[in-house]
Image 1 (cartoon, rainbow, N blue to C red):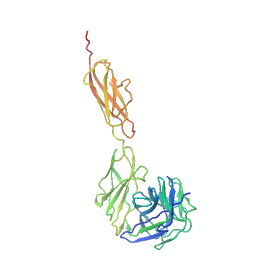
Image 2: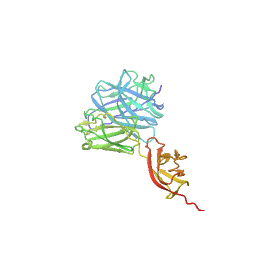
Image 3: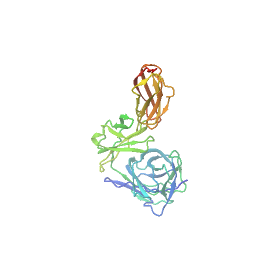
Image 4: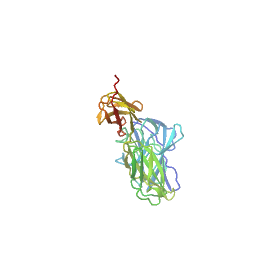
Length: 369
């Protein structure tokens, strides 16, 4: 079991707003520690057809990695409706407040759960009593409404020690924009990707394009795109090769008549493996049956195999790169022209093999008698 207290707040916007305060503001409450993978959740009932746009959480120490809004499933958190990772912290020192931003629509009279994700030890606050106030219809159901998960949200149980958390919710009641389609991939390189939309969203002032890590939750980058440019390519750079990413788009409202859309479905993008390079060099004059040193240079660690006339050179198979160079002592057995080559296999499997070749001429020996 774990105990926690959370302050949640959806800040006032220019459009109409409904509010719900639960044991808020925090006063005289204690923090309780959560270990990695332990998540908490608070149930509430929406009082209007509206849009949630931010969640503010009071943290005693550490930090939450994300929050998500889930449907109710037999009085426990159910299907994930939206996961928010974009957040700011104020003040910089603990105890602090993390404000997560996003948008998700809720329906009047329906129950939902706000879940709190942790990836490291985090202390948040809890309470064993419930007091609430706010707009008509917005409420916390009677009884115990705090849940916990010990396996990062896979299964849930009601925490019998928690009456409720400390929350303040604001829901915007303007017209929500239509959810954009999942973005399409226009280009994918080892270190960058480009995405776009195939059509625009009516009344959108701009768009927020997000790129998530391989788990589909951790935010890697986000770019705000002007309303007329969403069908053009939005590029993300500085990525890793041979890695899965997910991209999404949210249509942004004008802050008055139109609310932000829900986040689109996420598109899987897999960057290809990165290219490797290798060069080969040999002495300008190589003599028949006299040892010559062949060198290969690359930019990363790995193993290099040396070849002469497409046959592996004995003693020069899978030579370890030292700093940037691997060397081979070659004793040519035939006079005339040779094609020597190398194959570089990087240690990092996210990069491709590389090869190159060089033509050399083997001179006959000069015997002095």
